[in-house]
Image (cartoon, rainbow over all chains, first blue to last red; front, top):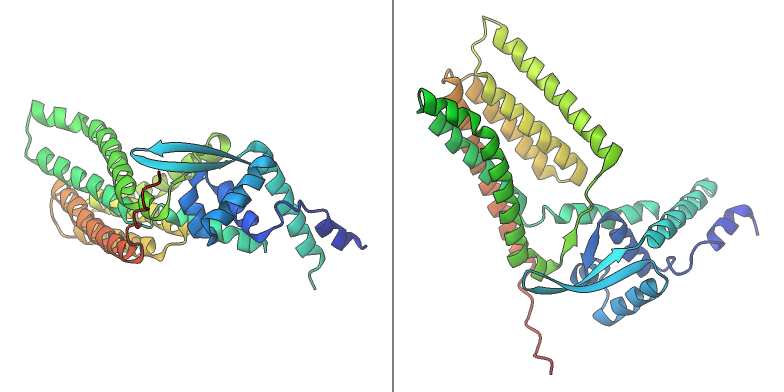
Length: 103
Length: 212
């Protein structure tokens, strides 16, 4: 396998899934986001979003907290330090791959 | 692909301005300043000194009030409809650079105004000109950062109102109060349009059946 392709083959498969990539891209830009915002942005159903968030939480990339803002119950999602590092590494790998395969 | 990753991040920044609450808050601050300058122009003697020195309190109190207003609006209208986002506060070097840049640009604008004011051939009320240009600059930066063209339009309006009042031959303080009043009305009108569009696009959530 060429080094160009190897850089893509080595990416974190947990992040390299479109819905989870979008979830992490949002969480990387903010301190926290609630379930409703993530659902609207990703266009996923509640069930699917829950599954993706659970996988990210299990990997230690995201922390989930059930809380209240005023009288509104919320499921708040935050990116952990590990998650930020993993997402940054993924972003760099992807950028590298795009740069290497430019015509 | 990496550019695609930036789109949801940009939308997260734009989300703060999606409901017009920023314009309402900013407009309220301008209205408070208009009232402050109106009161100031009618004060004399010791009262005038007291009012002069209370500007910082008006600014701090106004900022607190605006923060509460924006939060309350979002809590009632925005978060139940389209969700909650908390933004990262910047610390350290990046924040320092921004402050330094802001001070340099502010200094440059003040220098331009000083040149205009010290020229005996030009009759200019410096304060509305300075306010119009500075607020315009802040709005240009916001519009550029959030990629929202309406802020560029507001910036243009701020500059036009500031320049028009500066050359209106009004007294400096009267022109300043008029500037803040006019611009607060512009901001309230913009905020109302943005809020109306937001509410139309995002109807209130349907109540889920009780879970037992």
